[in-house]
Image 1: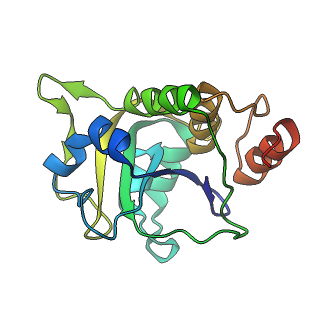
Image 2: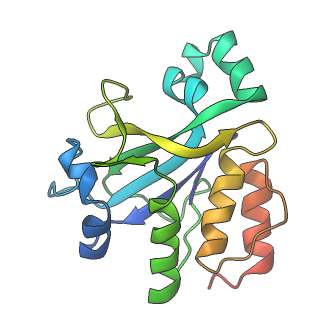
Length: 181
């Protein structure tokens, strides 16, 4: 799990099972087969805020207000290289095969699909290796990105606190309820 002061993402190692499960990302132009690709990084969030705020310096009032009240959801997917551990913003979690498959299934179920698969938002991205997709659910300040991350981790058998609105509470609850060694 990757954490910053307000948001969490899930970094999933890019093995053959993951490349197969998320092959549509390659079809959408993401370099999941590139030699340096090591992780897929999944994040869920409010459409207006998430797509219009790549950096804090680009924060705008209307997307912020919509994200605090009610917004449609999007999935942000990035292709990453090596992720250094240990690092204060990285929490490594090991899963057995069944738990990992359940976690992947939960992530895949977060994408809105039409007849041809997950719905890619063209020309909406932060850089060359990421993309946004329509996502299931509605985003609010009460049920936001960190509660989505917690629900995905619970699908993979990781115990979390009952409500985790902030990365700090989610990280603490994971460490508290699970033996991560």
